[in-house]
Amino acid sequence: MRAYFEELETRLLSPYACLSNTSRGRRFDELPSATRTCFQRDRDRIIHSKSFRRLKHKTQVFITTESDHYRSRLTHTIEVAQISRHLSRMLRINEDLAEAIALAHDLGHTPFGHSGERALNELMADHGGFEHNFQSLRIVDFLEKKYPMFNGLNLSFEVKAGLLKHKTPWDSPDTTLVDFTSLEAQVCDLSDEIAYNNHDIDDGLRSYILSESELDASVALWREAKATVKKNYSSLDDNELIHLAISSIISTLIGDVYTHSLHLLKSNTINSLEDVCSFGQRLISFSPEIRDKNRELRKFLYAKFYKHPHIADMNEQGQEIVRYLFKEFERNPDKIPTHFKQAFPSETLYRQLADYIAGMTDTYAQKKYESLKNTTV
Ligand code: MG
Image 1: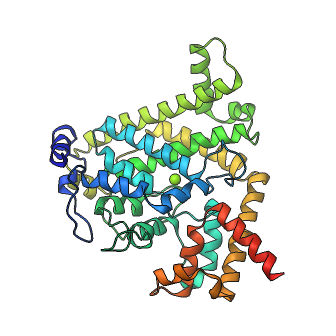
Image 2 (image 1 turned 90 degrees about the vertical axis):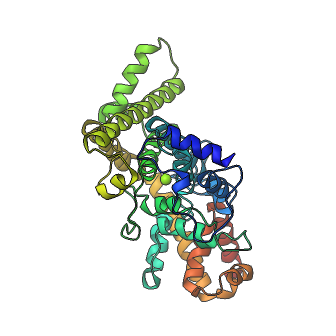
Image 3 (image 1 turned 120 degrees about the vertical axis):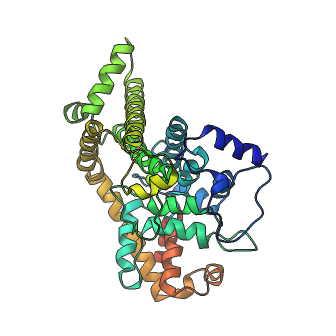
């Protein structure tokens, strides 16, 4: 069965795709799966991990207890995986690899999103810092414990490289560690941006933090999508209009990435994975026109949504919880669960602390904060 899937890849995928039968392999040798390629197996290992399940109670923009309908880190991740698969299929590159990278790309996030991460990074300034892309890699390489033969999930090289290379305007990983950027990893990066820009319009409108009239005035992608939708449907309620307009923007962005990336691959005579890695620049990309429009949308979201007082307040609360937990555990390391300390005895207290707090969901961190406050008053 695995050989059949591998043969299908060889037959169907583009010459610049990552093929599972030429993977650089795993850190610890294992017998291959009889029924799945290495990337399919990696995807399944990620889905069955604890860190993946915890994404359901981690902040994307809103703290997860605010509403059932806003994106959590988990639903964001599923949307990124959907767009990554779609684009990979169109480009005839390895859909399973792109999906595995997408599903793992945010595993390293702290509770309370980027604000929680900033707080933890400041607290860890004298102890090696904290960065969520590195943490994603640390989780799959070390912190997940479920196999007797090794720590971590022992994922394939290409998936791990994709995590380290995952880079968005909000991230700052040290990209010198791995000199390997597959098209699948690049697809995941751009899919992340497409997903969050669009679901943040949706969550922004749904929460009444953003208004349609502001979007009409400031965002060309939105205006154009709305005009297309209105041309196709004679009567729409507000909900339908918002949903269809966002769907239309996503389709426009995906179509543009597809066309422009094919153009880049062709005009730069990229004919192999080696060509991709040695090219040194991104080959999966928006066209210049759409890049500008996308930037306009991002600037709008940054000013009107992420910086909104309600979001800023939530972020501040989240940071306070992270700071409090850190200081409290630093003062009383005995309060870090014994099973957690015993699982990683070779780590410094500070790294154990960062791993423990980073792994918490919003809800767990909140509960822990409340119970510690009550017992220390
Ligand atoms: Mg993401």
